[in-house]
Image 1 (cartoon, rainbow, N blue to C red):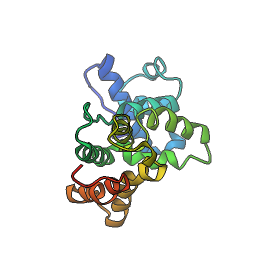
Image 2: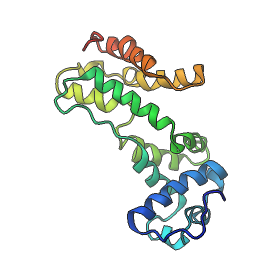
Image 3: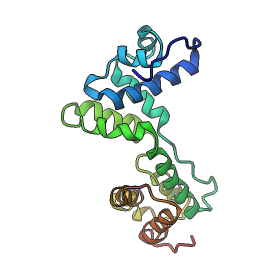
Image 4: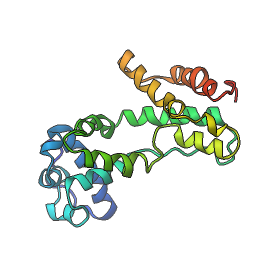
Amino acid sequence: MSGAASGRTRRRGAELVDAIRAAAIEELIEVGFGRLTMEGIAKRAGTAKTSLYRRWASPRELLIDAYYEQFPQEEPSPAADDLRGDLLRSLRLMVDWMRTPSARALGTIMFERERDPEFVAAMVSRVFDARGGRFTKTVLRHYADHGVVDPARLTPVVVDIGEALVLKHSVDATALPGEEELAAIVDEAILPALGLPPSQ
C-alpha cells in the first residue's frame, strides 16, 4: 500500500494517533468501506495492529473518531456582531473541508446507509450533529440566541440553504465555489431568508 512506510521513526502518543486516523481515511478511499480492516489500517499507518485495538474496538469506531477529529467546528464571533462575516467564514470552512481526503471519502460511507444504517446513524449523531450539524447552523443559532436573528426563521430549509448551494455549485460547475460565489450565497439567499439586508 502506498501509505505504508518502512524505516520510519517510531511514533508515540498524539502523533501516532493522528497518523492512524489519517491512515483510516486513506484506506477507506483506496479499498472501500466493505474491505476496511484494522490490519490494513495498521499497515498503512506503519504500526502494529495492537496499537489500534488499544484505543478502538473496530474499524467503524476508528472511522467515527477520525471523522470527529477532522470535521471542522464553526466558531462565531463571541459578541454576535458580524453575521455576514461569520456566514462567509462558515462557508469557507465547508469549502476548505471539501478539499480534504475525509470529505472525498464521505460518499463511500453514505453509500452504506441501506446496508449498515446503524453505522451511518452513528456517524451523523456522533460526528456531524455533535459538531453543529449543517454548515452555518452553529452561526445561525448563535445569532438567534443573541437576538440578532428571529429564531422562527431558522426552519430546516433556511438552515440548509448555505450548504445546499455550495454543493449545488460544486456539481453544476464541477468546481468549488470561490469568494464571489460564497458572497452571493450569503447576500442573495441566506440573509434575505432571514429577513435581513446584505450589509447585516
